[in-house]
Amino acid sequence: MRRTSTYQAARAVAATVESHFACHLAAARQRGEPELAPEPRAQTIEVVIDAAFWASLRREEGHSPKISLAFLPPEQAGQPLLFERRLELTPSVLTKLGPAVERPGIHLGVWGERDALYVWGATRALPRFCFVLEVVEPGLLVIKHRRLEGLDKFANVAVLKGEQVKVVDEHCARLPDYPALITALLGFTSPASWNDSVNVVVQLAASMREHGRGGSLLIVPDGTQAWRASIVHPIQYAIMPAFSGLAALMRQDVRARRQSLWQGALRRAVDSIAGLTAVDGATVISDQYALLAFGAKIGRREGSAPVEQMVITEPIVGSGAVVVHPAQHGGTRHLSAAQFVHDQRDTLALVASQDGRFTIFVWSAGEAMVHAHQVETLLL
Image (cartoon, rainbow, N blue to C red; front, side):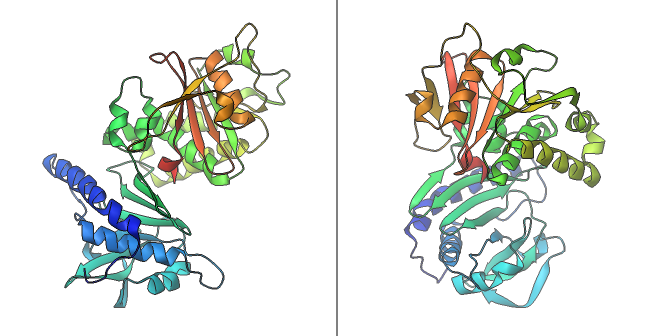
């Protein structure tokens, strides 16, 4: 590409991203997967990142652009919106186009010819493993790809914030005692797994983070009352009988789940439960997705010792595990969630912070302590 990048992080991450897509596209071709995206080269990746980064720092009529760029030719884009004249890929062009394509699910199509990249139009349809770059906010970019299947169609590959680069560690999901939810968030599960219940928890996590008010969600075993021993009584907003709207949707068969009406109903049900987490206190659901309570105050179970330490990890290349006191990781929400999982070891606690951090607390039998998985990089 003739354009020379000036954003150093683009140059630093390009080869790694190229290897990621080359590896997964090769594996998909070997499996005989149809409708695969073109393989992006490092130089292309670098130029696309550079243009998007400098565009993210500009403003159009007082607004910063929020755009998504997808690398594919028009013929792989289903029914695309095509410009009569294609546009050069520059920060000024992207800034001008931003207001037209900032709604979720719309991507500006980027392709190359004669060593130059251009914007050919927009699309909602993408082939599998399509290289996508999303501008989230000024200076914050997310590199992702379309999953093979599933309601949540994208998996994050890397996050760039200013000069900071975080590359998602896809290999950490192979470690023993690793929660299925984190594996699903990483996006390297098989297509069949996206028909199961893990996907719903991923959707709940994403929706919790989107409302931006912070919140806690406790997932407890269905049909038991043991979790109540770790909740202050009376519970402000206990639900009796348990509300089963989301649970009923998840009981429908696979054929129903492939229908757009079902998917729309699921999104509404997920957003309704996630919205309750904005209320002070924790929202409690069963592992079969029945709503049990919200606004619940977590307390230490009678006879249980205070949680003194936990291990924190982030699924990022180069990061390591750190053992800390829960109070060092966050505020009251994080401390109470760690205590809840410490006392109720067959449960899961999801905590969203107002600053965008997102932590999943589980009990690790192998480590014999609470394990806090910091996963906001996977939810951007």
